[in-house]
Length: 293
Image (tube, rainbow, N blue to C red):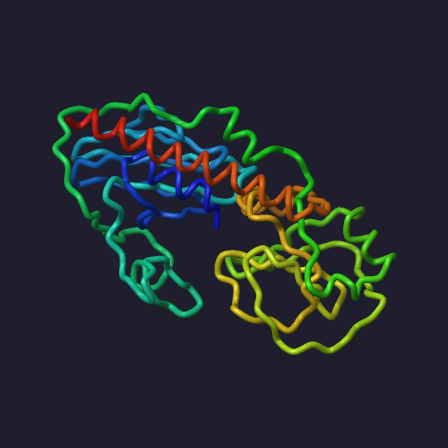
């Protein structure tokens, strides 16, 4: 759901590329480790208790066998990640280890984790003591990704023209809330009904993550991580990729607004984010390898 937290968590623990991580929602999990491991908690508003000792998020931490890690999650955030050096062992389906709950495939038996599940991880390390590694993500950069700014930037979608002047203005002036009916497939938004100037029937067309669809009842849905590949509702906008992590962390009681963004600005923001992720990956890997030598 949150690509930034997922990717940085993997980089912090020295993985050369994103590997299987645990994605958690409220309530956050508590885990007992029978073997030594290096892990990192990522996600806004998260931290951990390792054998009762507070450890911060956005850091790699080495733990000995027999350790207990309890993750604490803020009520103002939606999800977080526990990454481990070498990745968690998970079933592969269509070249992905991500759990697809609707189909019941991949991940851990194709379902959400529950109390008593036993997980394996791919690399065993020899760790003599519990320690917190020094490298981290600068707090001000994390704040940039998850800024409290209520506006989510969008590109105009292929069927934007159907809105007309009044509905188009309504889209960027009224506030929306994420409905409790939302899931990993899409965020259903609650707000005043948006009535388009024209309502043409359309053939099901390709959709991508972040597409904002206008439903027949005048409400909106934003497609998220487990979105379908085609859809038959008007695609009036698309959340820019740089704002998807921020959107993924929104919870129901937090209002959001949409604002239009040019393709050039969206491309610049994404290029900056990708370059920064590349720098994070290189720095963390060098630090991790030097520490283990």
